[in-house]
Image (tube, rainbow, N blue to C red; front, side, top):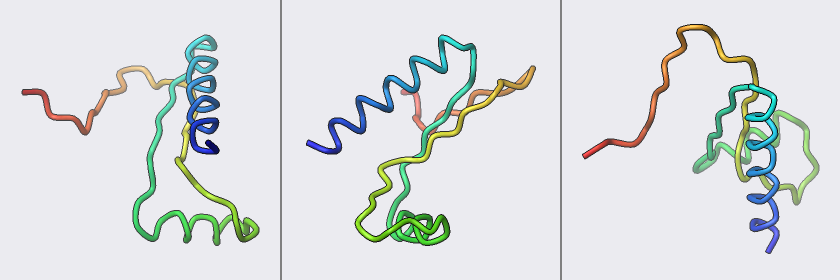
Length: 71
């Protein structure tokens, strides 16, 4: 159930950033990326990295890029 709770927190973070008129992005690391990122950050063993969330002010004229292909 840990990941269910994590995704609930992520949803609340996204709702809060929307309320504050901030931009946000999420990336789910794959393969060896989580281990390497945790190592660089110096996290203790046993930690998990379900996603990386970027939060900031949206630049004027910013383009929205989606990984999804519209059919």
